[in-house]
Structures are given as C-alpha cells and as structure tokens.
Length: 127
Image 1 (tube, rainbow, N blue to C red):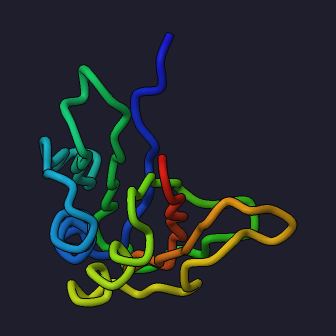
Image 2 (cartoon, helix red, strand yellow):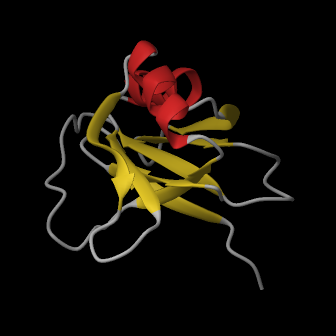
C-alpha cells in the first residue's frame, strides 16, 4: 500500500490551481468535470501520480466557501532553503503566515503558508 493523494475542497478551482502551480510550483496533472455530480476534480503535485502522492482539489459547483473546522492540521512540504523558499513564495503572491524559524520546543526549522481557501501548508527545511 502507498499514500495516493490528499483531497481538499476548494471554493474557486481556478484560483486554487493557480496557487498550487504558480506559487508552490506544482504541476496540474489532470482535471475532469463530473456534470451529473456537479463537481470537478483537479490533481496537482510535484511528480507523476504513479510515483508520488499528490493533492486532489475538489470543486463542488456552486459552493464558494467551506468551514475548515478544527480537525484539519496541515500539508507538509520539504524545502532545501526555507528562508529563500519563503521569499520566493511571497514574490509569487503566497501568504506566509509563520516566518521561518525553529519550531516550538525543537530545532527543526519550519514556516507556514496559507492557500486561498485558508488551508495551512507547513514548510520543513532540509527535507
């Protein structure tokens, strides 16, 4: 068994695809509309689905906002140089919500960025 994808419900598919591809540098791997179910799926990632886990962006037609609740934590991405990565993300329009620095009660250097729907994405240096 292996991890295939993580699904996020998004309020504006185009805006979300733009964030994950243009800000975070992922590729749009595939996209399909399901008219009978009134939803669209788009898969983004850093590699082919056959080789790595990806993110499924689910857009339910007519729904432009979700209550994230308190159960969702974050998606984590590795960054070789987290300080340079955060600066580049800001230049691309990304919203860094926690600047790079050691994690609380530890030495791992982390930062957080937020996607257009408010989902948190943790950056971990050296991974």
